[in-house]
Length: 438
Image 1 (cartoon, rainbow, N blue to C red):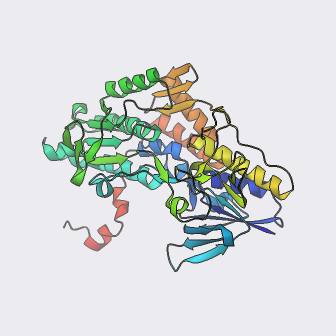
Image 2 (cartoon, rainbow, N blue to C red):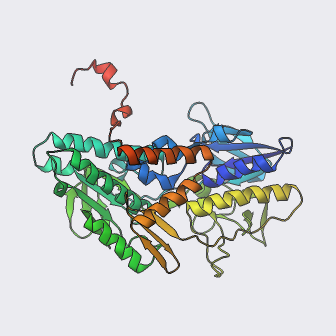
Image 3 (tube, rainbow, N blue to C red):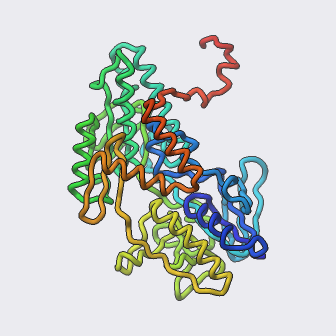
């Protein structure tokens, strides 16, 4: 029986394990997934989680519930020693331990790219995991509650100021969704006015959403600006110490919420703690069929996919092109991993990964969106509906599809749920204080 070890339970890892369970008989292989979180995060839903449009648990897919023949090991893989077919796992509790394998599948994903900007590590929140999106939502709603009890002044202004850093999909969608939430929230507070909201989107390059064309990108900027947002192009954050944001343009202001979405960086275990071949960008070198290595120097019994793998883009037609790191590619690569690993075990040749993009679609808040496929551009309500339709079909398992769709229907009838649960970050506070203020 082959011992197949999958490092990472994200899109590629989850789909690889899920489909391998269907393609391999129980006596053919023993499957193991190692991941610090017991669930897959469906990241395209995180902006809507931050805006209160999706219940947080509905953006997470339980590994144990759906991987019924796979052993799920909670912990971080800290070292991959492929020469000896062994990985080192660091659990939340207890000492590190080793797991041995016959075949390894590296789908560890990427981490949020951080720059050495003073104050970012202590003040900013990422938007890569469900708990981060929930924290963004709760902090924003709590800020409204606090601001409504304060007189007009610097503290109130700070509470009503939000900064998103990064103009890619995560940043723009998160910015658009939370701006939509804020415009909806302000109607519930008689003492607050829409003109008091300050939403800043900071992008170091000259445009946002590089996945779409120039004109659609400019339209998104105009749309966000018309709704009260401020988009700063060709601008960098120089400092964010104590929430005081200093921009490269010379502008300074205090921000109650800073969200950092400046793209992905190589996973540390892949970049620094493996004997598998690593390319210039810190990703594992793979062939088009997702086997690790090159045609000249193949690595036996090793596969990789997703954000931690430099997958050649055969659809681009250029020799040095690599597949874009996004959910659309990751879950398709996961499915191909399962087919190719099963084929390899059964004596058949694996197939190369070739995927022609289905286009780019982004939500900008309820009723606002952008879609582009080649020269076809759709804006506004139709694009927003396309975004929701695509992702409710793409999220894994029918159980999650139904829960997400039911949540949308509930919201359409009753509106957003605007209850903040920021207090759950300190669950013992009420018990310890006995209800007495400090």
